[in-house]
Image 1 (cartoon, one colour):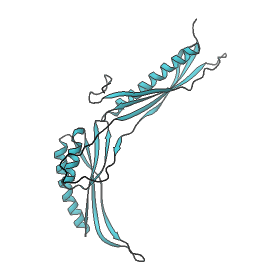
Image 2: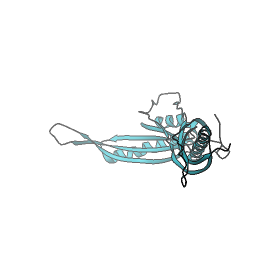
Image 3: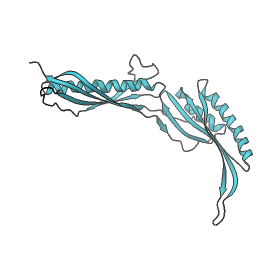
Image 4: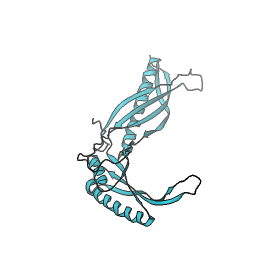
Length: 245
């Protein structure tokens, strides 16, 4: 599927999945000093293939002492980052999104909780523009010591282009339906009085991964990106008048 406007980057494949128009319109009888108007709402939905992915990878390290947990976690995280950078390629971005060092407690009825150890947790977000490397990155992370893959989020590098496409489709559909409705009532569109638009809704697609896969697996983790949908709505208020006979 490739339906890309000239101003949309080549990397982005945008196609109109569906466009529908909900009409809430009524022509008011014209009186002196009062306009006859009609209100029409157009909806559109545009589909795009994601071209960016964010993977949350974590290293959780338990130890008896807090300093041991922190030191061991640092070593394990360094090994994971090195493996992920190699698998992800030069264009990948890595950043730490969360770090914690927390005590572990043992609870007994009628007694104060006692500390039995500590857990250090380091979460790293990996951003990739080459979606073909997703499985390799996950495998490299888990093989090198990562024990958490908390989620995969697909998104777009150029979200504005898809938002603009959705708005344009919605506006075009609203005007076309206004013309059809006016003609059916023996009227014609004189001018557009107002335009209202709702911000196109873009929601990144997130996949949850409950646990890391086995380090003994020989086949790369398969991940399918699917498609992202962006919806928009445009409402037109148009002035109408009698159609010329």
